[in-house]
Image (cartoon, rainbow, N blue to C red; front, side, top):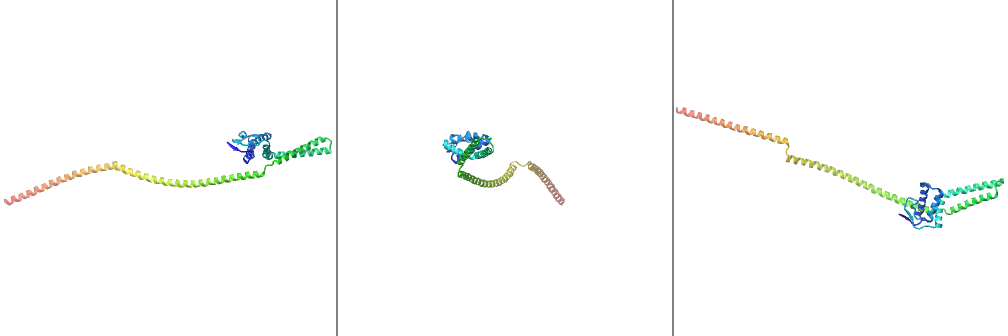
Length: 259
């Protein structure tokens, strides 16, 4: 819950203005109800949650005299001075009409003219009292300076946040570029690992085409071996026939020489 020491402080006066706008523009209360409600707040109210959408508590109550003075300054003079000024001009107009009619006709009595004078005097006295409680301009200037300083501080903070955000964006871009390079390198490594795994797979599990080629080669090698064996047998037979022929020739030569 927010706490304010007194309604005489700058925070308290700002709270009164907030309550007035709440009653006038959001709750659409009448002028007389607003005056009575704000006078009650200035004099003896502590809890403000009944009148505004904030949990605010006043620590020190002003009392009748000081509360009424604050009410005259911050409510009557600030928001109803034009109404009182209008009544003053209205009373002056009525007084002029009464004096004119009394001067040129006997329709009006002296008592009616005196009543108009009294009414106008009362309006002027009311206007004097209201103007006597005109709010201090220095307080408003100080309040505006405080608001300006708060705005400047807020702008400075927003500027610092913007700078931090910009630097964070730059760092995020650098991190993004690094991540892209990392992903590209990771993809290259994965492709190499896939080719290596394929090589290992080919080594452990030979290709069916290669197996067929090896079987065909083995069959051709077996046929070649059989052909070589056949050639060896043929060569031995030829060699044996040649030897037999040579032996026959030699025997024939020996026999012929003996005969």
